Length: 297
Image 1 (cartoon, rainbow, N blue to C red):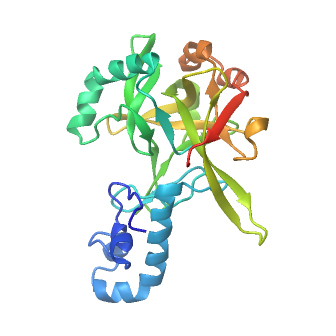
Image 2: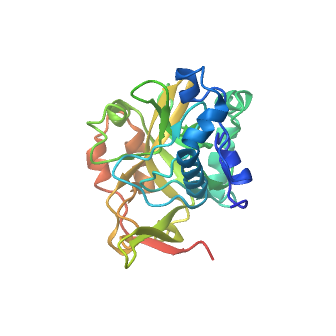
């Protein structure tokens, strides 16, 4: 497993490198039980932590099919993948496309890009985009009109006991208006995430009844070079963060996954980011005709 790509801040990364768990001094358990030596903690919790660590490392590489819940990245002191992904946790920006070049340049020249840089989160200009990356996003400026801003992928939500944080990557378009985490953004803070295409892993049930993931596919609308992903954004600690909206899949890609991103026609970008517009109505114009090809060859 040494070839797995371990996310930045992955607290259980040593599971992959050494084959055993390593416990940080500030993990949630040691905060609640400061008198327990880490050596004893390791003996008690090694099986659980090792399984969790290996599954997280695999998830960082493969992004397997997930569950009914929105995509979550459970964390202690940093953002760490649990592998519980609903869909659309990767997309790609091809900087050779002229339209995307202009969008990336506009984001790079913003004061917000410099602020992200100072905070240790430089914007990703091109290539495969991962959860928690900072990328160009289209939204409405304070003065009105369309503008491009760097934003970080994922809303951060505190756990019920306050000792963990989940990073939500996707929001279901059918229920976003009712969910506390999304309803304000659904009404007032909608955005569009420009991409060349998005990635999805085929999910299926094996003959023994186990759910598994298969090939990785690159997917985009037919006849398009830019894929306009519908999203929501909000401010967290002075920085904008976004989620990608999802919906049931187009018929010809339903064999890959039972969800897909909300992909908007280019002519609907202005309407989508307009706070006065009806998002439900615009979602009805989401693109259906998709092309795909295997991306893991």
